[in-house]
Image (cartoon, rainbow, N blue to C red; front, top):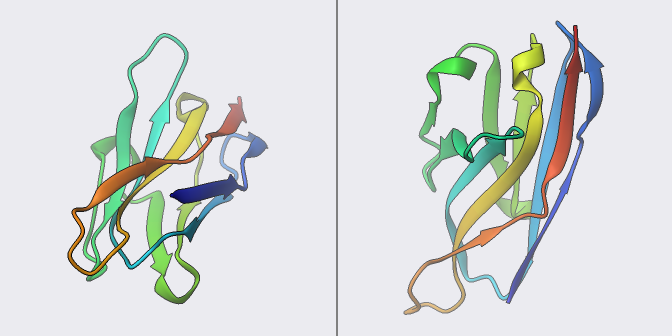
Length: 121
């Protein structure tokens, strides 16, 4: 089993910044992709940012130029630096990591518990 612990959410004024963290632990051989999703009330969960094992990244159009995803492989942790926050960024943010637990194992996705980000106008 793999556990993910998220931190860093909170309340911030528009234009402010937050940094989210998601640390993975447990039965980990390697971590492939690491993603951040968000879900606002009444909306579907959407992909915000993606980072591969080789640190290639891509972003949703709504956050390009404002958010930066990064990873620390030594700590099995993924980060999301969020700058120039807007009220429409308000949502619960979830990390998702693709993990193999053995050298020949198939990758499996795991979700974090979610962290609330609220941006006031």
